[in-house]
Amino acid sequence: MQTYSSLSDEQDDGGLLTETSVPADGASRLLRLADLAQELVAAAVAEEAQELAARVSEGRFYVACVGQFKRGKSTLLNALVGHKVVPTGFVPVTAVPTVIRSGDALRARVRMRDGSWQDVALPNLKEYVTEELNPENKKGVDGAEVFVSSPLLSSGMCFVDTPGLGSVFTGNTATTRAFIPHIDAALVVVGADPPIAGEELALVEAVGRQVQDLILVINKADRTSDPERAAAVKFTREVLEKRLHRPMGEVFEVSAAERMENRGPLRDWQKLLANLYDLVEDSGRNLVRAACDRGLQRLSEQLLAIVSEDRDALLRPVEDSERRIQLMKETVSDAERSMRELNFLFMAEQHRISDLLVDRHKQFFRSASMECESKFDQALSSVRRGLGPHYRRRVMQLAQEISRGKVMPWLKLEQEEGERQYRIAALRFVEMGNAFLNKLADAGLNELARMPHALDPEKGLRVRSRFTFEDFIGTAQPPSPLRWLADIFLPIVGARRIITNEGREFLLHLLETNCSRVHNDVLNRIQDSRDRLEVEIRKLLHEISRIAEQALDRARKVKEEGAPAVQSAMERLNRLEREVSALG
Image (cartoon, rainbow, N blue to C red):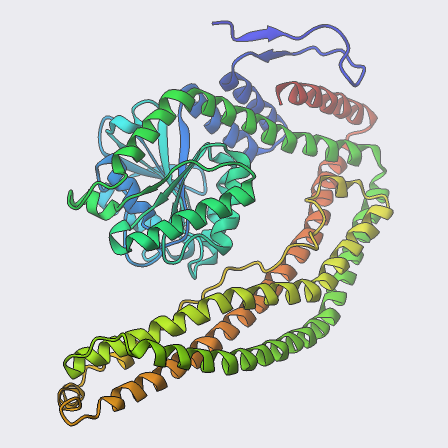
């Protein structure tokens, strides 16, 4: 196989002769990029390039399992490979990405933040990758790999178990988002109750912008009814097609728990397996090539940014660079002061939004209570009469159904209104952040060109809703034996109306309580979103001065050695830039 192909001796875009050769295959190009990264003292880029080169040469591609926590992602992956290789549980489990790949023997290893690998016994893997035994990843684990003999993985496919979104552990969500650039295809695991929404939808959208192959799975099919799953399938497909602007394929309904225990109906299990085998057969090689291309582009852009920063610092006098950095720090300090002042304005806006939502809450409850009571009275005639306890249970279930049917659509309306009001309030924060970025740009600070895009004024609430409808099962079905005996005799003495009146009171209690919970949920999302926005602005502003300071430190050392060293450094940077550009 020909490994290298010489570039033309013609001049490149910069008018300079290209004196290097570019490896023809992706793995060799990545290894050469790793060498260049080492030369630029970019150890993280070099390490990632080496790892990507290894999986490209071995034909491995990553199919990540993504979704909210408690969707059963880990159980699904265990069922697909036929072994319990990753921990499962009833609480948010996965703390770090875990790659499941083909191997002759069942074994596991973890990668620490210092780059070292540690072999671990499979039963002990949970000590490193679960939230319970490694909370917020305090042990400093970068990732884990499990090797398992599986026909599905024998041709290069690797599954990735990612931390679930929406748990109380914010670091988990960040870990999953950071893994997105490494994803080649995705198993999107959703549910019927609740269906895909909020932060989960945003993640799938981010993944879908990068990869074409999204396999949609509704797990835990044994816990939901056919109508619930049908509605969830329809809703999930419509939402994703609207967000991604492309048709979605079949949504597979499965129960991973049943498959692990080899019980229950197969449902769409065989179809899901066939789809994964087709992915290997039809797209495996292309997915590996696409992963290589994305990696080359992403890593080369990082190296080119380092080259450009170093060159600018060499061309400017040290005193000029120091003044520029001082200007950056002063601007950041101004931004911090302005944010503190704007905090009071934002608090006033939050009070305004709270008052607005309180008024909407009162108006909704007045109209909803009358409508629900009327619907409740009409539906009572269809409730089958029997023993008192059975009658109470049916009456209370009716109250739950009617109140849920009224509150849940209102939740959507309140979230939309809260989102709209938050955008109005947050716009001033965003405008302030962008104003300081513009001020730096007007001062001629080229570092801005390599910063993330300016803050988006259209970005709304930054956290998902945590609202779940409260049924108050204990109230609806009291366990008291005295209550049960009383219900037995109420129909006998003609006092069934007592149960219906209690059902009507329970209906209003459900409405009022869940309306208040909707109100609090929206206000909490606004507060959390405001906090995250402040963090984004501060991080963006401080990153500018950090980049410039690192470039200045390198330039100062070179300039201390004299003009020949500076000239040599410039020639070296030009050479590196040409070669990195050619590789990327």
